[in-house]
Image: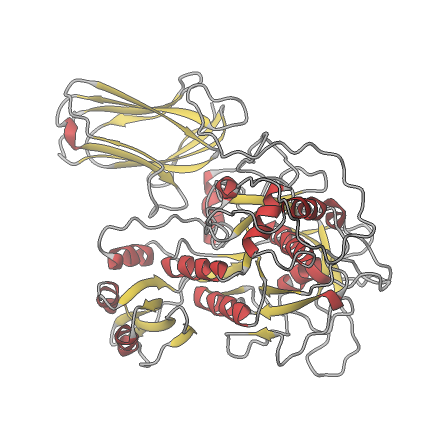
Amino acid sequence: MKFASFGVAAVAGALLTGSAYAGFPDAHDGSLSQNLDRKLDSGRELDSGRELDGEELVSVIVQYKDEEGYGIANSVDVEHHGRDISHEHKTEVITTQRKNLDLLANNPHIAAVDLDEKMYALPYIRTNDGNAGEGERRLEEEIPYGITMIEPIDQGIHSVKICVVDTGYYNNHEDLPILNVDNDGFSPYEGQLWNVDGHGHGTHCAGTIGAIGKNGKGVTSVNPDPSKFSFFIGKGLTNSGSGSSSGVLQAVETCKESGANIISMSLGGGGFSTVANSTYASIYDAGVLIVAAAGNAGTSAYSYPASYSSIMSVAAVDSNENRASFSQYNDQVEIAAPGVGVKSTLPGQGLPGDGSPRDGSYASWSGTSMACPHVAGVAALVWSHFPNCSNKHIRQALIASARDKGAAGCDRLFGHGIVSAQGAYDYLKEKGCNFEVVEARGGCDQFHDPPPSTTPPPITQPPSTPPTPVPSPTPSKAPVVAPVVPPSPPGSCIGISVDIATVSHSSEISWSIKHFLNPLGDAIASGAGFTQHDASYNQNECLEAGVYSFSISDDSGSTGTGTYKLSLVNGGKVFIEGQLGNAKEHVFGFVSQDTVHVTDSCGNSVLSGF
């Protein structure tokens, strides 16, 4: 396994432009309002900047426990009437003065409060195409390489509904099903029609799932016969490619209410949200399979919503089945799919109801956004043969049958491997739909290997002419084994050594390492309780390639209390060192065992490479 090359500045810039969405659950310290304040002060992208009576206004998502909580939320809303997200989950979005956050967060009738953060269509890369340029029509039907890679099967006779939550859907496309404007979509944004896609991202994703096949034009898809599946469109993002957490959640809720079996989301933004996490978990438990793009920052940062355990996080591979350099990798990545140079549909020139002839265009784009709809489409394809299976059985079948790539078994780069429709079909044909499944965990921990069923379920329509799969051994899946340090084998995590030498006041020294992109998240390594004076302490950790912050403090405030240093386990090269005393912070990033970049707390480069 190889890691992508990057720099600290590049990753920081990616965060600011919305291409990396990192975050961990905020540590519960008894004051939710403090967490909200930290998020506001950290520069999160919000619908803020407005004021009322000199007080900053912020949009927040409130989950209330009862009618009294509902009343309290509305009483502090500037319009005294919030916008409902879900009656079932008791959530609404309100705009309130910042000073009211403490009142909401500490009220016993309020279950949770989260900032209404910005959401985006995950950044994509346009790919040059020698056969058709960007936006051109295709007069002959093409089979994109990704359709072959996922080892397709014929569609079953049981229709499955797929909801695409994105920038909308170009409903006049020559190569896409025509949807009912009254019943087949929803937009939570005023003046933004779901059947208009002013951006193109949503139409491109929809084309991978269900572009019409065997019509002599454009491209084909995972589900080429529109009579055997249906779309529902949730316009979670506006025509600009951005939206809000509340808008996405409202679109997702409407997907569920419409009867969607599968929700596909190639979007991200913000950090971990208590309200969103519980909402997605509830929808998943209600029988809906949710699939999302892992993110395009090329780091180990968590991207949301993909990294919630109830959602399948999808990584991207290229036409040679190699991991895409931009594809994020972490312990929530569950499966991989084609995501580099994916040819699909784009909007044409028509407007809703203007009588224009059906048109449309096509282009090749790259991103985990393009990988996500492959998995959603395969889930629908397999489910159409096994209607008695639950969403949890389908999820299990997809990951259990995925073609293993990278390190043997499940890993953080590919998850369980590349999705295979034929493999998942064969798995359910053998196992049936009554096997035990595990609760939502995400990533490699999601797998459970049940025994074969003694009474396989009826198969409604076996694949008539499935393509011959490329023979590939499928090793048994196993949980990720914690890395051993030292030494770190090439291509795995990077062993570092944290050394503390104390002189005095040692019990007040503490240090931590966090993901640089998520300063509010939990520490991934830490040390404290150095009770001996004039002593040396050593702690080894193993980190994947990425960007981290190292913070160390001595609350005694004394100087000359000792020294600290960070070094590579392999070779012993020191890359951070200093004297204990006042709080200090360093930012460092690994590309490999031999390449590290370090800055001080002001962002000044102090070391680059070895």
